[in-house]
Amino acid sequence: MMRISLNSFLAALFLIVSPVIFSSCGSESPPSAGDATSPSPSGSATVRPGSRELVVATFRDGALDELDAASYNGPQFLFKMIYDGLVEDAGNGRTVPALATSWEISEDGREYVFHLREGVKFSDGTDFDADAVVINMKRWTGNDRYAALASNKLSDIEAVDRHTVRMVFEAGEYSILNEQTYPRPVRYLSPASIEPDPGNPVGRFTAPVGTGPWMLESYDKEKEYVLVPNPHYWGEKPKLDRIRFKVVGDSQARVMALRSGEVDIIGGDLMGKIPIESVPELTGDPAIDVVITDTMCSHMIVFNNDDGKFADRNLRLAINHAIDKKAVTADLFDGIGKVADGFFQPSVPYVTPENNYGYPGDKGKAARLLDEGGYIDSDGDGVRERDGKPLEYNFVLSTGEFPEWKVLAEFVQAELAQVGIKINLNILDRNGFYETTQSTRMFDLALMRTPNDSWMPHSSLMELFGPYPTPGRPARVWTEPKLLPMIAETLATLDVSKRQGKYDELFGYISSEVLAVPIYYPVVSFAYNPKRVRNFEVGVNSFAPINWESLDVGDDTWAWKANWSKTGRTPRPSTAA
Image (tube, rainbow, N blue to C red; front, side, top):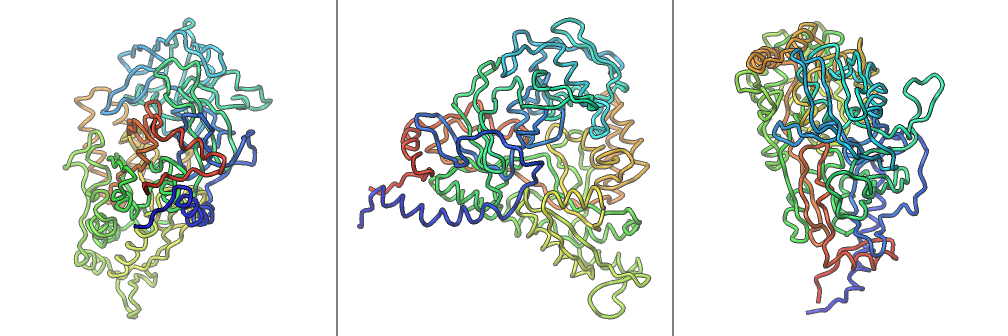
């Protein structure tokens, strides 16, 4: 048997793999908010010698120059790493103390008194106290940008003493406490990182300084950002010296980077999804560990009914029946994910089989519904029309966050063609997609997803079916005047025993009126190098995708990898003798 030296193997591997990785990284450009950068020693993913460091691939820039706690700027998981909330989501519907150790809620649900944890400091060494809470809450509440949140309607707030805060909200909605767990904008920034800005009541954000377990060490815009432990953190201390996030926009390039050893961890919906076709390959690789977990998210096709083109319920129903949802997961995605049998996943609170249901693939039924509605292919070109208008639609999507959406959209295009509906696909970058779906509204159908985890279902309802992103705008999924009072009444129902009945009515309406096309229920996957990564644990939700504090570097390999830092790359060691 031919013997290959370690140095020869690594040199050959690098020559083969690196051109693919570096030529692929720029194929999908994440949105940029500006050109400002913070000083960084290097744009590479090089591990510092002697450092307990891991490298994580992410599909987009961290926007650390604008990661204001009182904003929606930047990746959500970074907010949870740098900033704390008063309370946190512990999973399974549990809310646990964080910056607040206890709280009281008035009977009408409007008044909250939070008792703050003592001795907490921001990562800049300044004290966290009631004044800091008041300053931060006043910076974002009352802003239409956050109208989907009940907490946005804050009518009064005061620092009762140094460690007690009293908040009074306009309405007593049951979701207010849960919203305090959200990654943004209900987080707390050091007041020292807010400078006066004439004409701007919230001041000017200068740096992402929080009380969370991590703090920013360096930032090289569109290339990488590095987080290190906050020395003042009040909770469990991270085991690592630093985490280096390397921006790799292309999904296949992230897979290649893991296999080459350039990065240690990939995956997670908010960090950079693993292509579905790569999951079986990675699962079969003995040098890589793969973890797959469920979500509360639904992926769906939404109708743009601004001009009434989808006002006919039977047309919406026919489009639902025309698509074989079972084939999406079983054939298209090789069994990865779940069949969508309703707008919401069954794991979403208050969802039941009776109030949440979908419409299975049945092309015969779809054709009959279209025939009955007067949609006929009168000229034999394969496209139905009615009143001289063909059933031809502009279908928009973006693949930066979900690479599998391209093949999914092509599948939908083929399915609808079989019943006489012509689909023109329009794949946009993230900025273009949001501009098209939220501003210009120049689309007919769009591939979208629901929020996830603790946003479900309460906050998601206003985000999906209320004016978005600001009052006066059409809803993201379906604009329906009847829905808004139903949503408001449901959220204002503090009596749990009565709340289920309200959700039954609301969810039942969404299902029966066929307001969207649920297409599939995704899962989330991670892949990592087990020789490098120790104590990998999936986090409690997509906003905290990994338990970062438990992560450690494998003692048998971290020093080896550091020795290779001079090469500017970190290939995986060979098993060749």
